[in-house]
Image 1 (cartoon, rainbow, N blue to C red):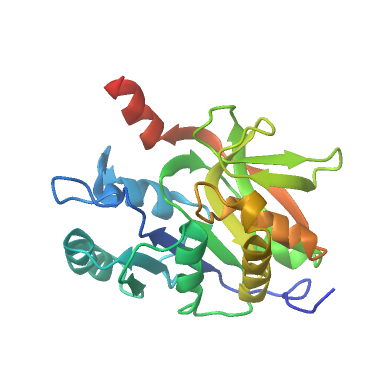
Image 2: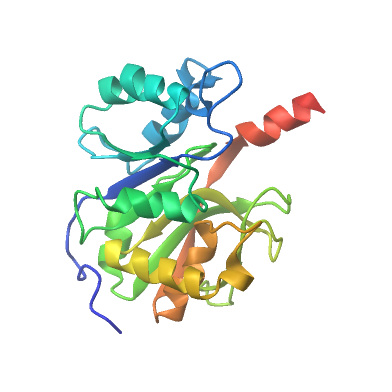
Length: 247
């Protein structure tokens, strides 16, 4: 197995990458999805800042498409509220969230630390200490936050009897373990091994011609690492709720 991780017992910060370059990010009224009101905060505040691994000392990398609404949001909110934030601007739509997240790794502050890709569109509770979990298990290559569902909107992870991941698929219900939109990779190097696997297996892993983050976990397993899941509790998905209200 390649030596591409951090050793057991090591302590390291996290790289947190938030892809916000999707076609649904900018809304017709000029606002963006991340600023949807949620209680007394916004969708971004209710997700990113509520994560158990979030710290104000983090160096988050936001990946945005170069459009007026995103430029305004970055200027008025991201760079003011997150003083350490780094932003990657994409001139065009990427080939899926996997590619957008990959662009974010170019500005990762800690190359040997775990990479957390957070789509920041599902609210949930978790007490996971992601850095500690990786440090305690040198063969762990990936983690995913999951909850029980069989809704076709989600991506899914199939586990073996030992709790290790066997398969991950985008928008295909292969189990009752739905992804909560947060994925962690042992390091930047492991992230890119996983991306390369998705590229090599595009015919079976792409969805609507695009590469997403969840199926990248198949590449982590293919390179000899374990992938495990962590529970996401009290899940609230704004997308599903909005669709239900609209219906």
